[in-house]
Image (cartoon, rainbow, N blue to C red; front, side):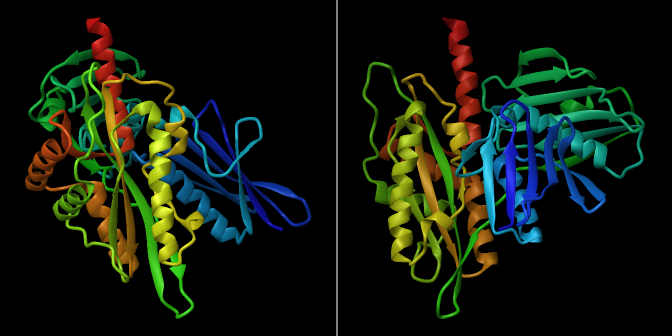
Length: 398
């Protein structure tokens, strides 16, 4: 039996893969590392080694797993065995906490944009919109590998959080300031007239669907995407409840232009209950059970489906939380009759409603749930970094 063994380092952002042949011979075949300029992939084939660099994305787990599964397909292995740390076997890929630092990921993505740019200029400015509220920039001289400066901005705080790093990666400034135009702000950090901006956008990456083949020859493309409604609650009051989940799911589908799930294709929106962060694992499992029941009716085995946006390695790191920080998890079960249709549905979910749609969704959430919740569908990473920033500010005030 030919097996691909995946070893995930528990301390460093590094994954090693080796193939075990039927005869018992083991050979290192793949290494994935996160560095300050991107995701480094080393693929070994016979005596050759292929090395390439990809820009990091917010859903880094999905990208790493996609690379592993691609190699598994190329090698025609019969099974993938995942191990985390000291040979602890896991059901799925588990990455160390260092992989999930959104600030480092965003800065690495911006450096990748600057380094990989094929332009002629003394100074190259790589700017990345890493999520709906995070942007980063790297200012780089064409002939250098060390940046002149790097900038990270979190637009979810008021005022915005602005961090500046020097060429050695040391934090030299951390302040609050509202920036109307991030691009103009970054350009103002260099006196070099011969400069060019390279812009990249990391948001909007879609999950990989599972192909489900039926006995009649029909194929469906299926996957699950989790998003979260962010909210707050005074410490002396009980958690609010969603008054009408069916109506809220209808509004979410309408503002993201999603068709309701039918026999052929569409999207089923499953809304959880408002909970604190430490209850998130339990609540997402409830939604997954509802999804499995729906998939069973469609004749689909739930074990084969990719879940996107509910990374258990992140969820399990949440040990406790402030009682006034709340999330409402939402599971989007996506079924496409073609790969293109699945990707279109997934893209609309990942990108979220248009500005007009966000206003409609915000009004509905405030009337159906609570005025303390925001009409924005956040990723898990976005929600956690926002809560972390707020928690730090509250701790300072105390």
